Length: 369
Image 1 (tube, rainbow, N blue to C red):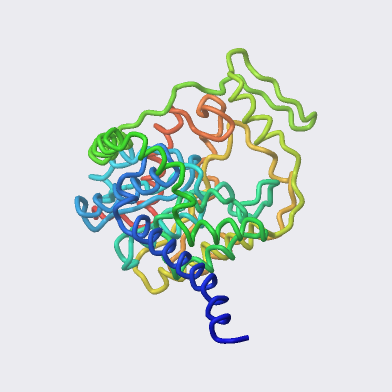
Image 2 (tube, helix red, strand yellow):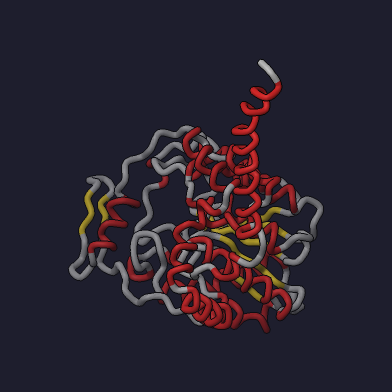
């Protein structure tokens, strides 16, 4: 093969390589700078995650050193506003950095950028459903929603580890592709922005201005599960008149579900991601506190599943990790205090919030004193 033929054969390869480099450069220019995350629509997964992070970063400049931040999914339903009505008594200011639908994988990235020194908070409180590890048919280690929550937080150095943290090869590839080319994840949001850019910018300004007040003053619904009855021996549920379909569906899906095989995947997922958080705070004065949340309007029987491990109980042996009494909020597990099978209603939140503030301040010692 002569030199001219060799050069001709190399040209398509070089063109393809340059095209890929150009694609990654354009993706980085658009989506790996602070600009695009600042104009995300609030009702997207990434948008609400970024607004929450931004809100809590601003809150750090407005409050003192006795800050307690809480993280959890939608089940960690409490009101920082009600908890902070006890600040004169406890000395602590409570802030909530949890986002509905997230798990500890997302919380790791939230905390990494919210608290880069690992020393800003007096305590970080995680709300969990159980101190023991119970596998369900839903597997958190393959929950690709995490990609959409944390995409703006992912650095190039995060891409391999983040992708490999998922369980199945199919989801690993989806995470690798999306984390490498962020435009894939932002595609629908970008198209919506391009269709009405001025309207998006107008809304974003309002959201950035008012998000803190909206969330701080938020009032949960007053609807309840009052009248719900479950006979666990007969495995029979009786719904009171007036419950809507969503309320009934949550009972059938989340309480009346059959036990799943215990594979150990939840335990491995918890050890991996809580372990990374605990490593960041090793040697820090910040305390890590786990709280078992109110479980349900009528909790499932404790002996229904034989749980093989208790990762969070194991963490309690570390010097800066504390476990709240797992029965501290059992008194809230009544139908009239829940809006569905998983979430407290307004009355439940009104009781839970000061109880949480008092318990955490007792564990830390009153800052007021």
